[in-house]
Length: 248
Image 1 (cartoon, rainbow, N blue to C red):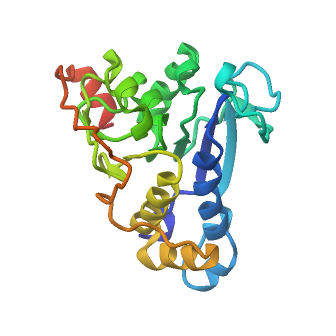
Image 2: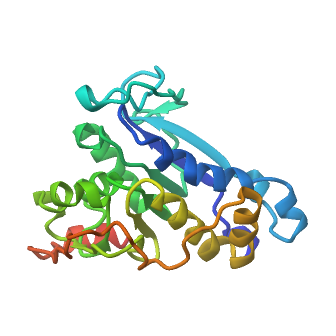
């Protein structure tokens, strides 16, 4: 990919009850490729990567994975956001949406913000039930996608998921040139490494895994956690407006 086309403005959407590894697996890979060492092996401007941490809440209070009601974790590590959805940068190129127990509690304002941002993004990357938020925002209309297999029935049965083809046996799905969705938790790291290889180059993704001492799954169809879940074909067709929005 030409240097001027390498994306470097990333955003991370956080909400109370996010899943920790959904966030820190992909971020570890992103941190690694942002090191100046990667410029020395022929990938200019990766060290200019920036990350905006955006919260769905109205204040910049620390966001905890333990704030999802009775199912919240007893041990949790909070993240201090830099922006709310009301003042977040509008020039983001890549948006990462993690899953977690709190994803179903994400409010309409945050969903509307995602919907507004998607046409401006170069890439949308969801992990786990982050796909549910993307579906609510209309970003998966008419596309193939996947999500956490433990939450399969609850996500795929929602009316907002009805225009998406949900792929059960998938570690991740490249839903379009712009949109990637992954299965649950650790699948986010595998999918993000695959995204790095697709966007920055095979050698960069491989080098990142070496530095992480991480053996990434390289087969998008390798999903040992599918269980008895089955594909869920779309139940309705996309409207023209929704289709254009998803493919913008």
